[in-house]
Structures are given as structure tokens and as C-alpha cells.
Length: 266
Image (cartoon, rainbow, N blue to C red; front, side):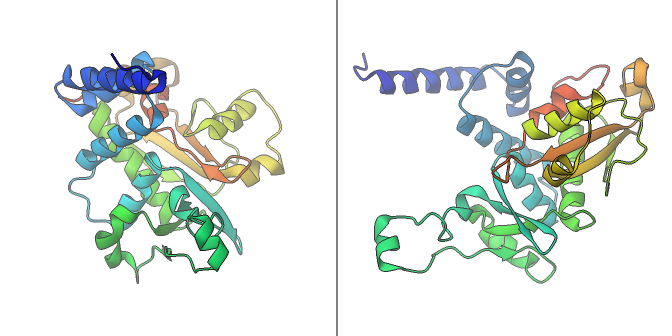
């Protein structure tokens, strides 16, 4: 018997997590049951599971931009605005850059930050492979740049792997004259913006400023869709929080699309 109540609760959660994983033949099946049944597990465990599944999803991927974009599925990002650009930095890494010193001693002595962040671009892409586990490369998410296109690629692969559906996902510059038949928020704030537009609310400047990514998803085989909106595009929205963070919910893609059926991969 574990006497400490917190330690006992942690142990119980860990055992429940282990039991859930071992009763499934694949990690993908374990993940799909969690999100479809809304089973509650700690965020840190879910992030690690998503990371492991993405390792399978992207096993043959040699594009550093796509791999860096995939980090957004399981690691929150701090967004920084620089001369009209939207730059994503890993939240944990950003906290080590001097804004939140690692220790009181570092602050007292005025020591420089020990973490350096480079922008991922053609010149730095080769260095991603040796430092990927440090999560210390920034990604440009400005509309029209490679970051959002890479994120679209990740989502396409994610859906093909987990649901065996073939879709095309393209980033858009803006939502104009679109028939908003279906939408999926890629995070809580994206969902709120989608709800506002869906209900005929005003898509004002404040919302536009929060909207980080807008995508149009189309099914290559319309037969995969529910009949009511078959052939219509689906819009995907990613938005930052009031404190300029992006916390993705990849489970929304799996549970929120208008698909006829979605089975776990074998």
C-alpha cells in the first residue's frame, strides 16, 4: 500500500495507462480507442503516444520541414510576431531563452541563455537531424511559407495512417466567399473561431489576428464522406491563445471529419 495520496494516484494512473496499451495490438489502436471513447489520461502521456505514432506515420519522410511541423502535434508552441511573420518556437525551449531563466543563479549572475534557436530554412535544414531531440528550431508559419504547407502534409499522412483515407490539404491565405459546410478546429481557439463563423458571427480583426493557419481539405474519394455534404471541402482552423501559444489537438482531425466510417489501422 502506498501511503502518500499523490504517489498512489500517480501509480494508479500509470497502471491504467499500461493496462490500456497492452490490451491493444498496436499503438494506433490504443490511441484511437482513447480519443473515440474520450478516456482521460494525463496530457504528458498522450503527447508521448502521439509522438510514437508519428514516428510510424513519418518513417519514410526525409523532409525536415514536415518533421518539424509534426512536433506541433505533441509539443505546445510559443508564437512570436516578427515584421509580419509568425514564428513558432517550442514552448519549453522558449522558456530557456532568458525570458524565464533556468534558475535564480542564472538570473543573479546574468549568464547568457544556453539554448540557441535557429530558423528552419534551406540553409539550416541539414542540421535538423542532429538536433531534432532538442526541439530548438523555429518554424515560419506565415501564410504562403513552407511551414503551413508542411503542417498540411503532416495532417494528410496522419489521416491516411490512422483512418486509411486519402485527402488533399492545402493552406489558404484567407477565408473568402467560402461555403462553410464543415469545419474542424485544430485546437480550442480554432474551434471557437469556426463556431463563430458557422453561427453567422462577425469574423472581426481580433479573430483574424488569432488565426494562425487556415486549410482546405478535400476527399480524393467523395464516397468516404457522409452523403449530406459529399464533395464539399472541409475547412481546418488553427489559432493561437490570448497569450500567443498554439496547443494542437490532433485528435480533432480523427473525430471531427465528416467520414462515413473510421477504423483503426491493423
